[in-house]
Image (spheres, one colour):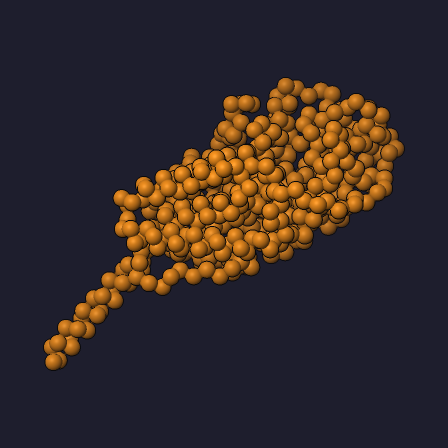
Length: 440
C-alpha cells in the first residue's frame, strides 16, 4: 500500500510539474512582428477609406489597437505587466489552466476584434478584408501549434480586446467618426479664432481636451503656464504684428522644396493624416530594426497612447486660448485679401499646433526604443513627394513642425512651443510602468 501511495504521489508530482512547464508560455519574443505590422498596415488602409477618420479619430484608434495588441500578449513577456491598472482600464485575467498560449494567435484575434469594433462603419468590402486577414493568419498558425492551444489563445486575445473596447466607449470620443452635433459657440473678440476660408467650417473637436487620457492628468500637466504669444495687437511694428508678418514674408519666398515639405506633412494625398503618418514611421522602424512581436507590441502601445494623449493635451490648449489663425489676420488686418495658405487651414484655433505637439510626443516615445541618434528614411509619401531622410528621430518632429509654418497655418512661435509641449507629453508617456519594477 505504501509503495502504491508513493507511486501515486510521484505521478501527481510529475503531472503538476508538467502543468507548470505548460504554464510557462513560450515567450512572445520568439515570434516575428509580422502579425502586428500587417494588422497596423491594414488599419492604415481602413483609415484612408472610412468616412470620419480625422487625425484625432485616427490617433485614438491606434491607441486602442496598440493597447489591445500589447495586453493580448503581455503574459508572454517576462518582465512586463498589464498597463491597464495604471491607466484606469478594465481588469483582464489570464485563464489559470495548464494550456500554453500561442501569442501570434492571441494578437491576431485581439487586433481583428478591436479593428472590427473601431471600424464598424467602414464599407462591406473593407469588412471582408478584415475577416480575410484574420482567417489567413489562422490558417498559417494551424501548423504551428495544437488546435486547443490556438483556440485558447484566440479566445484570450478576443476577450482582452472586447474588454478594452467596452472601456473605450466612456473616454469622451466614442464614435466620433460619425457626424456630431456642434453646439459650441466660440468666444468673440479681437485676436480670437474665427472660421477660416475656403470652407469657413465651425470649430472642430472643441471638447476633446476634456476627454479621458491614458496617462493620468497629462493634459493639465502639459499646459503652458502663461499665455505664450505676444499680446494681441493690430498695430504695425507690435510684437504680434511682427509675428504674423514673419509668416506673410516667408510665404512670398517659398521654394519648391518648401512647398513639398508643407504638402508632405499635410498628408493630404489619399485621405491620409498626421497621426497615421507618425504611426507609419513607427512601423517602418519596427521593420527596419527587425523587432520581435513583444517589442513591436510595446512600441505600438506606447506610441498609440502618446498620440491620443497628445491630442487631448493640444486641444485643451487650443480652446483655452482660441488664437486667431494667420490667414484671418493677414487678410482682415494686414489687408492682403487674396493671400492664401499652401494647404487648407484646419478648422480649430491656432495655438498650439496639433501636428507639432503630436509629432514631438511621437518622436520622444520612439526615441525610448530606438535611441535619439536613429537615422532612417521616411517613405510614407515617397511615390508622391519623395522619401525624406533624417539623422535623428527628433528631426522628423522638427520637420513636421516647420512644415506648418511654411504652409502658412501656424506662427513660428507656435511651432517652437509645440515641440516643448509635445516633449512633455512624450516624457510622461515614457514614465508609464509597463516594465515590472518601473513604477511612478
